[in-house]
Image (tube, rainbow, N blue to C red; front, side, top):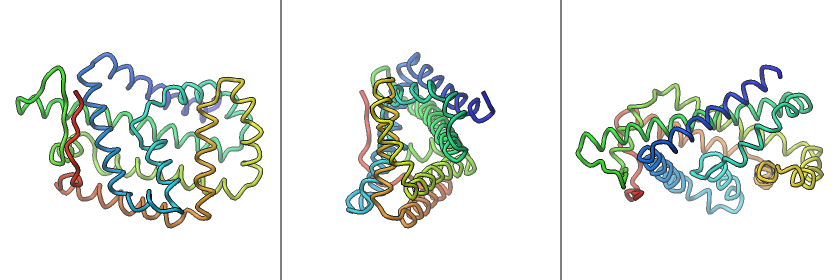
Length: 247
């Protein structure tokens, strides 16, 4: 396997390691779920206008649920891992590069979420709020945990990778052969047990194609995410959202 394939598999293995770590430590797992739930609610709040927009709603939902969501992507990731050798051998370099970026984004986000969960647990313990059955986060504690686990370069890399995946999807929508190939792959993919992966690819392509140009959408995400990161690193609390609690 070439270097690209090894890199993709390393990213997927990193994600698996984070899942196993949280599964082995139920309290850490609960804190990770509440961090993810808060981030999901924050994204919905930040992009409420785009989610409601007929042109951008589908792509915003794709980012929310498929690239930045709290869902369990185990099945999709397992399917990715199974096809990596064939993917790097048979697919054009630009598609392999996109999968590399997706893998790196996924691994980075999962690692940061675990680190945030650890920081939240320590913060709660320091306040005497920790317990075996609950974990909670609010605006102030989210900001504190954000600053405790990563620097501006890490968060900028996360944003840049997310934008790179979006830019690649936008480029693919201009290639009619890509969409035709995806449709032809649907039956064989289901038969081969790659349905989750196939659905992810089709959703990404279809939502970006429906925008008829993703420049404004991606520039809005870049501007808002970088503004939020700058504010948090400057000491601000997270956006005003109801407290999120998992019990």
